[in-house]
Length: 100
Image 1 (tube, rainbow, N blue to C red):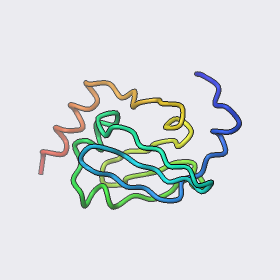
Image 2: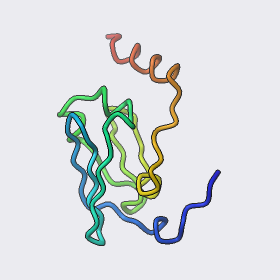
Image 3: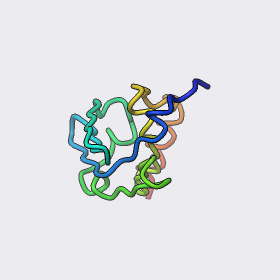
């Protein structure tokens, strides 16, 4: 796995906004980052109420969406890393979401 730069390793999220098109993270140091929602299939298949239910983990170094079983590392976002979840895994997860 690639090394995370020291600057990005210390990046801490302060606020999170998800729209139908983008995931936007406001960082404690004043920076904001926005990436296409399509980079994270679980978020892309989520609903506004699921998007709104996020929590900071690791002191703000990560974000967790419990209803979507999604965790995103802030440093990886800053480095432009997309989700590496396989299409097969996403398909299985979508099937589980559809089941009662």
